[in-house]
Length: 116
Image (tube, rainbow, N blue to C red; front, top):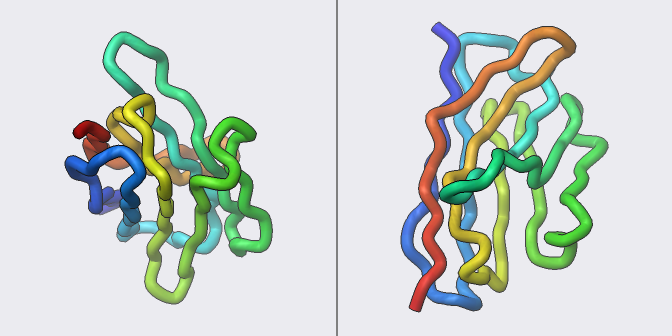
């Protein structure tokens, strides 16, 4: 059974940090690129970060560079999104996506709320 399970979300004050985790099972994790998306209320889901199957390539969208980093550990079938200096506009549900050509798997999402 294919599963992607995000964790690590929660309520954090502005300027705080969170590390989201994505635990994968039921498929060959190292064959898949991992993408992190987020969706805030009333908005479309947007791509936040991408790490290639081997982890050699890791990118964060320009507007989040310097605050967010993406990584993975293929020995643990895990991917991570480190988020620093969080802002209220980062409030969203964050999703992990495993992508390999025509195959896509999604997690259920984890809520991140940035508020004082």
